[in-house]
Length: 179
Image (tube, rainbow, N blue to C red; front, side, top):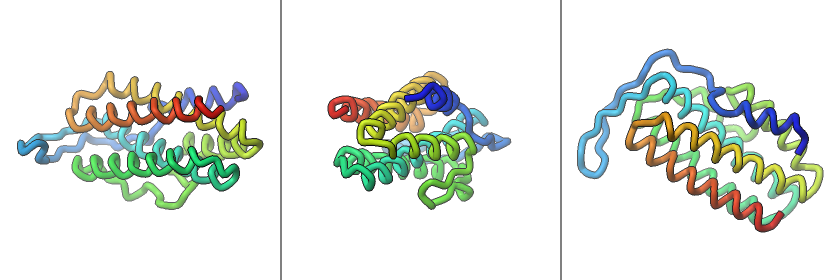
């Protein structure tokens, strides 16, 4: 990958638009009522991770269509599940996600929007470049999730991020095994 893409991927973490107040909600987990309060940083992180998962899904869908590499289709389906789970957590925590577009390739975060365009163009050059893009996305996702987990105290959110980290490590290994 070119250094420009690597620098853009490094900027992905903590780039979400901030929601200006903390959110507070009650939920039941394992039969117990839990009080969930997300501060601004956690709301920002959650909104960013939602769009990051959506971007990965959208790129993998497009690269599957271009290359026919089955791993893109399989991993895209997994990214959809991650996206859905993060939206569920946001809903339970009272985070407004109505500005997030359902349309593939459309993002509210301008960094993610630019990254989508750049990575899709790079991945469209060849099957090898497509796999390199998949590896880069998963490496970045892993780094973002590890960083976010260090800063997250909320049980449910931390569990979801931990699960996503495990999945991203599996996706990374899958792309590496066929690259």
